[in-house]
Length: 116
Image 1 (cartoon, rainbow, N blue to C red):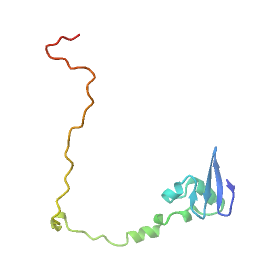
Image 2 (image 1 turned 30 degrees about the vertical axis):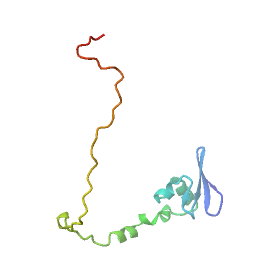
Image 3 (image 1 turned 180 degrees about the vertical axis):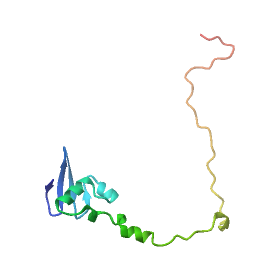
Image 4 (image 1 turned 45 degrees about the horizontal axis):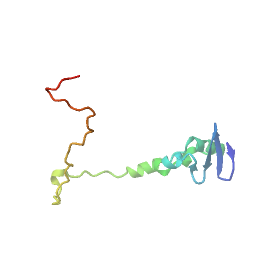
């Protein structure tokens, strides 16, 4: 790992190299930005600076967010037999039709024709 600026570093793995920016929470492999969990390159940079990767997680992975999301009880709803009718016709599935088939290469012989 090579520290190159105040908030970033370059992590080399074999012939590949990745640019990690800790302040922006990005890595050039893009895994960190896609899932919100620091990738292996970001973890290497975080540990090098003496930080904890748990502090760089997206807020949706935190316990407080989970508790907030599920703190309210879900109220049951009535079944479909109690729903109001809207008057709109229901959407029907598409009509099935036979797809065109590739033509046979050989000519079909008549029943009375001799086979060669």
